Image (cartoon, rainbow, N blue to C red; front, top):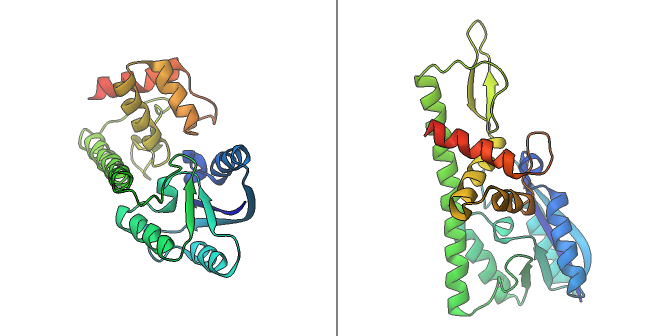
Amino acid sequence: MKAFCYLRVSGLSQDQGDGPDRQLAAIRSYAESHGIELAEIYQETISGATEREDRPEFSRLREAMLASDIKLVMVEKLDRLARDVLIQESIIKDFQIHNLNIVSTMEPDLSSTDPTRKLIRIILGAFAGYERELISYRMNSARCRLRDKQLILEGKPPFGYRKIKPKGQAHYFEPDPVEYPVRERAVVLYGSLKSFQKAADYLNREGCKTRSGGLWYAPSVRRVVTLEMTNG
């Protein structure tokens, strides 16, 4: 069996652990273990927040599937297909109408018509959207809190923050757009697992990187979580 491959990244995705290398590695591993031969790879680079218009490669992929004998496309996970749950469902419905199939390495029965599986898929998409909105809200809240306090910090910024130096003014720290989502993920994982090492293991499996680009370990997660608890 042959399949196309669809990767979807943003300008910051490589640093955030959502880059093409990680996605492609997961897809290749799944394909090899299931006897699937990968054909052409389509890589989408997101230039903005629009879901519907920012998809030239996906349009090419769909046309290729309609015109060829390959009726299967593989993605790494649900939110690589679409980050908006309504668009996600419209894509899956369109593929079902045209007898095209989608396989996700993390949700193998992604395009199932089973009502229960469809409900689970929609819930997962909704939670992913909620998590993104929550991170954005917390970033903005942290930024306002730091500025309101006129927090002037010395030394190297802790993970999740960057140093800002306005011209002619004292420097201050604010949330870093690349690191802060990873920091939030670390805090959430520790809150659920109650183990620094288990949280570190999950971060590594998800492809999240430390500031130096290395792996996470229990002490590094502990530093992030401790700072979160201290700052409230």
